[in-house]
Image 1 (cartoon, rainbow, N blue to C red):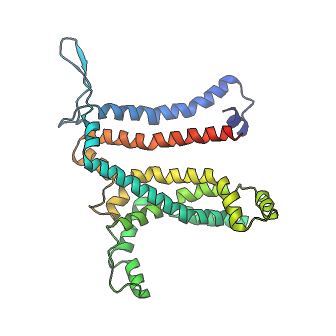
Image 2: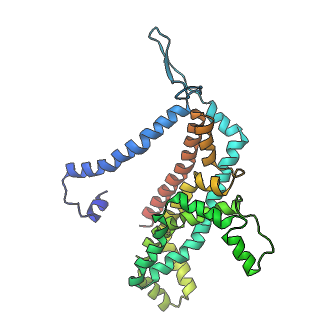
Image 3: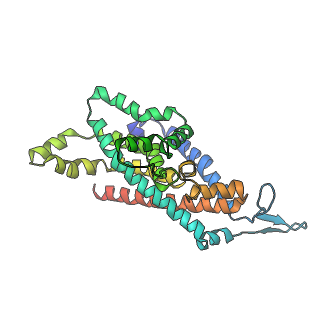
Length: 307
């Protein structure tokens, strides 16, 4: 923390001011993450009922002053035993892994090209990456329906090029989901990767070239290892929201698309089973946060051991 305060020019503050600054992000974390999660955990351990809210209180009195705590773990057992939930979770992880890999394959050359472009061109190129955010996310996803349907823009283009003889089914298939996800989340990978690549010390590449490294070997031995913080940060920004994505699988994947986000929506709003939906959300959160925390822990240890 002292390094952070020194970096932002606040290393001269007294101890009370430092504690106050440090307390702000912790306060934000407690109010907007830990407390909501505890509410969610409490609901997930409750019993369902057909009422508002659709679950029973965990602490109930018998009218004579005796309070009893009821903890219901059946929802978590059902999540492990029901193949529907397991398939949805595995399907979501599969879509997230493949989409992240595709974003990395497409986004790395784009981020590298922008970072290596003349300084006067970087801002216009970055604006082209950010420009789609000026339009509503929902409208952009709806636009892909018009592009991917049988008589849409993509099929007409393929027919015009002579690559296909008749329209092919793209909409409401897994391919449509991947197209929509990669298009929507690609900027989240490019921007942190660009921020890392643009700070790369060019003298290291010049030194590698002086020692006889060819451009490809320079990239493998110098650029790629030094850009790993941006790769990891960008991959996390894509992977984590894609696992819980609901809109894109629903609009582009059709009714056969089975992802955990759609199940959460169904449990909350169609089945009115808040405890099951909360248990699903808690399992999803643990499945995402625990690997991320372990990764950061091992990164920090490796950094400390490397000096």
